[in-house]
Image (cartoon, rainbow, N blue to C red; front, side, top):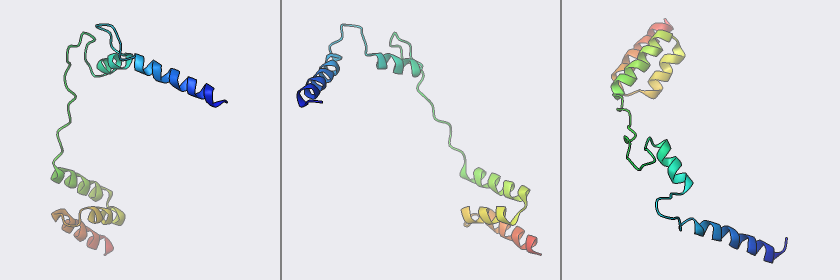
Amino acid sequence: MKRGALSAGLIGVLATFAGSDHLSNGEQPAMVGKAKADDGRKESGEAGRAPSMPIARDPAVAVAEEYEAARRKGTREAFELFIARHGDDPLAEQARAELKHLSR
């Protein structure tokens, strides 16, 4: 492809993008309307509910659930994994005691 043809094509693409700033009153680029629709907003511009974040879980509850899962599984590997992840947690002592009990 010749250099002149490439330059002309590039200029045409740039002109197309530059022209999107000159919309008549009330018009919006297609992606803005889609973003509003995806956001739960109406096309009239009315704001919808803001996306909400779930409440953070209590880390102690998550660790306790993980310990219970290891205890239900009852394998050496499950307790070792729990200890590796939560070695400084008080439940790690119970997991170590379970490991000692398993090795008997």
